[in-house]
Length: 79
Image (cartoon, rainbow, N blue to C red; front, side, top):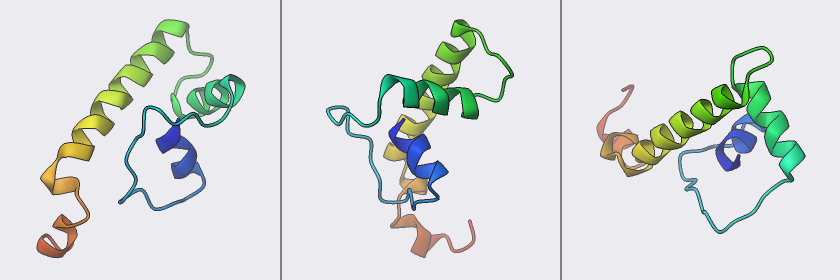
């Protein structure tokens, strides 16, 4: 939710890192955002679960990747 809500507001995500202890939004807002970004019309709970697990995995990998860090931008112009 933290990434998706910032992405929707067109905020810069380069320096943002997920903070598990931070609670943002309500359950209703979270579900609405997941439904919006899931890419399926009327998804099942299983499809939403798979989407959130996959997104969480990808974002976790992105946060730890040297190629996705803000510092890499100066070394890999246009990459």
